[in-house]
Length: 119
Image (cartoon, rainbow, N blue to C red):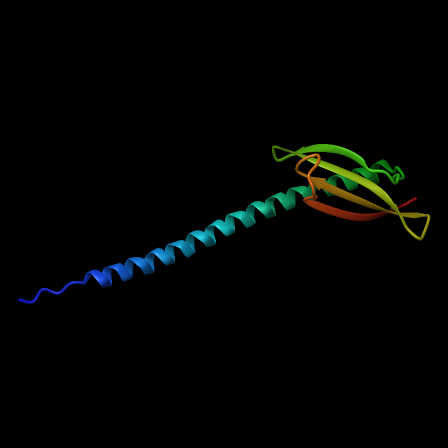
């Protein structure tokens, strides 16, 4: 009776193939989770910016050229927003730039929006 099995070399090659495949799956899953976190943060920051732009339009105040800052709680996190008016060629219109950050002095905003308002 001949007993046949896998040699040690065949077993080691199979283990190496499965290890490489496992690493690739782990890397893809990690990148996917990171992208989901980024998209969630970007979506919430955009909602905060849109809320503030709507509030500015409802208040019907003509924005100044200096930054106005504030914060808002959303989804259990504090978001720091700021906006300012930017002059346009038409004196009846002004651009309104809105930025939202996760920290008061964060280097770059998570979301930036621009809208135009009229007198």
